[in-house]
Length: 88
Image 1 (cartoon, one colour):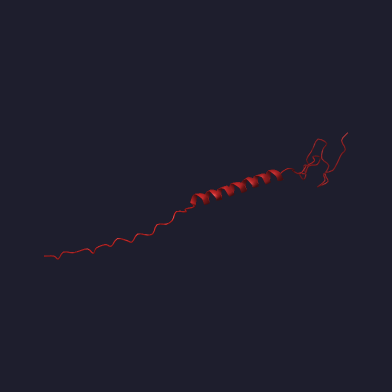
Image 2: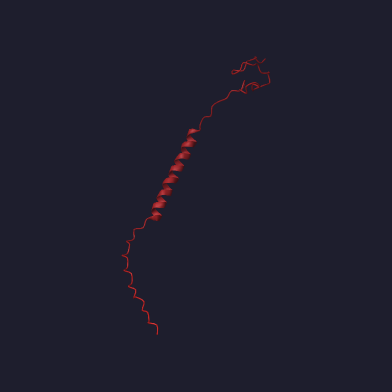
């Protein structure tokens, strides 16, 4: 036979077939267990993200590096002044 227990939050007595309190919504007979094992996948995802960020920065540096010397600028060519012919 099932022992009648009151809701831990509001104190109402749920029916024998109820697992949740209809007054406050708390699990009256259901044991809620906190989630475990979330730290390792989160750490693995952070490590993969860090490696991807390092690879992205390294690729950017390697692709934008330009070690070629800059050639000296050529002097602009002298432009001769325009000659005008006098009107007759």
